[in-house]
Image (tube, rainbow, N blue to C red):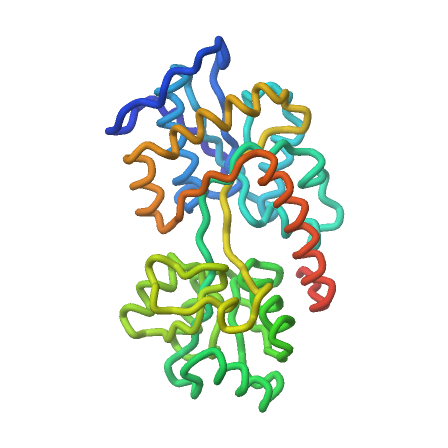
Length: 319
């Protein structure tokens, strides 16, 4: 359902330095191609409030969920490249091309990267009844019983499914994928022992691991997660290349002038560095990032290639 929210209230923190230009001269729209309430929505609203303080122009957060984020994303792809319509994109932006070959836009060519603003990794978890105390034992069990270990996910082609396929490929093991109709049912199935393991977003995994309901095996990132410092990464256990997580960044339409890109990046970077903004992002379970336009643009292309390869090699077909 389409939802608009006008952000007029500032944050309880010093304002971002006022922009030294007449832009923007009207409201700036940030399209969030997901339903309200999730990490992308929280990030957009937090940034929007700080940017209002900088720009003294309304920042409108417009939720346009549907079609795996393609509906809202297309709105921005077709917008005028003047910086007044932006996208709060997430990892699905680079996964969708492999799963939806008829997308009405190109996720790299039709967008201008501005800043990759936040991230959280996925965590490999298992039900405590699984007779594997660490990743080495988990992999050994999978090799001894090909297809015998079941992995729940939020659905075919979901990030949790692709993380499973990526890990299986890197580890050289066969895992049985069991899709559910969302993240909550998948988590419930792992908690109940209906499936044995799965990749969960760190925001969901942490309380379950802390409470002893699930056993954490590893973090699917290049570095350890601040909330679970005792868990090793898959990379340090010898499974480099199995990194999987969710990033959240700001993009504009293709053709956005370089001067506008630099201003947007500068203003958003200043907003992200405000103590109140950082605190809200961290409280939402995210790590703030400061990835610049060129690096972020290169990341988009690299990740499209990565997930296209994973989908092809695993033989994944969307429902």
